[in-house]
Amino acid sequence: WISGNVLYAATLCEDPAEQAALRQSATNNLRRYVAALPLDGAIDEGAGYWWNGAGRLLEALDELHNADAAELLRLESVCNTVRFPAGMALGGGWCANFSDAAAYPEPLPWHLLFRAAMNTDDEAARAFAVAGARRDGSLALLSDGLPRVLRALKDKEWAAALTAAPDDRLPLQSWWPSTQVLVAHQSSDASGLGIAAKGGHNGENHNHLDVGSVIVASDGVPVIVDPGRPTYTADTFSEARYSIWTMRSDWHSVPQLAGRGQGVGEQFTARDVAATLTPKLASLQADIGGAYLTPGVSWLRTTTLDRANGVARISDSSDCADAYLHWIIAGDVTVRGESLLVHPARPAAAVNIRWEGATLQSVTERPLGDPTLQRVWGSKLTRLTLRPTGAQVKSSLEVSNRV
Image (cartoon, rainbow, N blue to C red; front, side, top):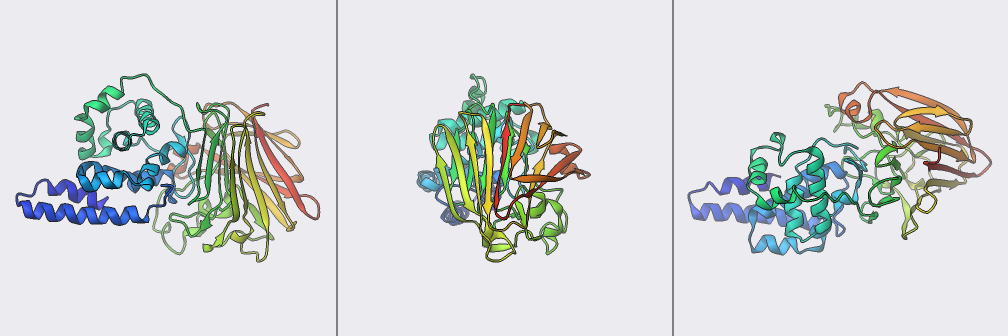
């Protein structure tokens, strides 16, 4: 971010030697960032933070526009990170929002992604950027800042691309090994069900205590959700961070074991994480027991999108029967015996949520007073709490659009 601004400023230097020195310094910094970028291009801060991390890198390389930039743009990690925003998308502007990222971001600087896609010959990312800009209805936004506005306005390829027929298709499934995040859709136009599931650890950047967390979307709109973050305050990046309810594991769709939640730090991690990707299904399996403050616990969670049958299923098994299962839901909830009918918070098909191997403990509404959360979710979120039955946990939650 800073190096990109230095590159802009360097163009105003009258002394060629000073300009060259500034450009070389910025280039060295960009190389350091690329060296830390995982091979798959994933950003553990969440999809929203890509735009001020890897996105700023790509923007700076476009401004640099020399042999050094060309070399970096050919690297696998850099090419892969261009695919990250589309891979994390749920549809219609929504995205898988682990960490502090918002599930429905503010309008984004789509021209940035378009230029990166052109520089790396990535047609799918280019189409995703165009679709996003058309949805936001603007060639550029004043909120992007003057440099970005000017860059977008003078780009004839960008203007021409926005007049073409839109292509709203998303990758059918994306797997990011470095962050252990899987995103999958029932169809590439985001209709039907979609899932996002993660393993990971609790020492990630902008971390929430959310190892094993799951998001399920209907027509792109999250129904089982990650709340995201409220408005940043002095507590957000202090020792009080995990006193904020949206950061804690008891307000994510993960279990609570023996009355205890997940621990803070990289040592609290998922184990034996494996993704399965086929045309008919996508699934993520992980032992998330290592993320908990309860020692020696194994908790196997498998999240599956069954495309053929239009079902998302989360299966849990463990020897730790002293547990509660929390599920965070957005929308209007109606209890129907051993199931819930949910009408999403934004226009999308209603879904049926039913469970086996567990009993209903409570359905708790949480009013949202924070404007950052209200903008995304409206006036409330709902927490469904289930109690596994039997001496060993063998439970499942199934989401379908057959209501």
